[in-house]
Image 1 (spheres, rainbow, N blue to C red):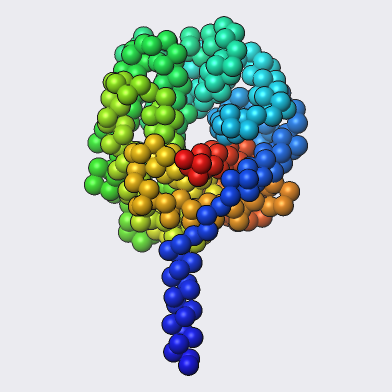
Image 2: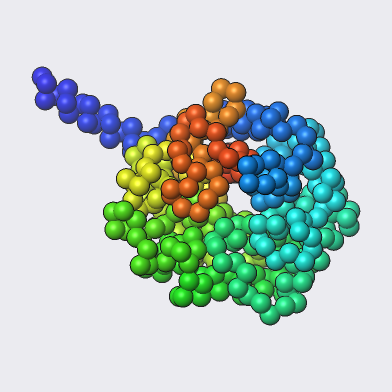
Length: 375
């Protein structure tokens, strides 16, 4: 009898892993709005700078831009007048400009341009596009290609180049974007930040071998790879099928998805250290959100096979759903940094140094999952 009970428990445990619950779109949407509302109630003034112990930052920095990326995608599938106002008030306050002005080459400063360009699609007001276009044009018209020396840059800047290339039907934006991407992939850190053998990315030159994690593995930071995954999604989503270098982006996207798949933990999360679950192991929402976002998009667009990725997507969302507090606060978010040890501890109740970008990643994942389920 005891053997039968043990077998049943093992079988039920296996089934819970092999067949995750399929969520309802209305439940996902409800969680997204709760998380969104929590943040906007905490930050009702979109003009307010972001105070931190080291310095005060303007509200058009990359962390806030990622929140608006998620909010924009939520608005596209479930428009609310107050959300559009929240975005427009923010962009108008900053005069549709970038931190450090149009001469900046810092990808983090360019992330806000993704929202400006999407808002331009709603209303073709030249004010919405001139500063970001002038900024990127300066890069397009230069020969410098080594600006993206950390992989976060790909998500912050590639979608801006893509939107401009599409908007103006100008391949120069695609070519310059590729030059920058290729240098990051193949040159930074000596031989590039892309590990062709593992199909994973090092965050920057500091983590290229011989750097190792405590268990002896290479250091592949979850959110760093998440930024690359999201960058490829937000590039491929808009690029024409015949755009230059699209095939390579697709190839890198598929390779990264396949590399991530076996690294998902049984609880549905990916650890902050992808290859060393004992190094600050445990639930983490930002990397997991970006992986669910990318895999959902990939299957929906027939780039990834559903049979292979469906379980990981649904398990990932099951995990993310546990991060949302009743008031909308998102737990298990690793704050800013560049590696597993940064912004620790990560826990369900710990408030990260910036709450905006984690919520933005969560919104991206939820919206794309809703599209996936409908598809």
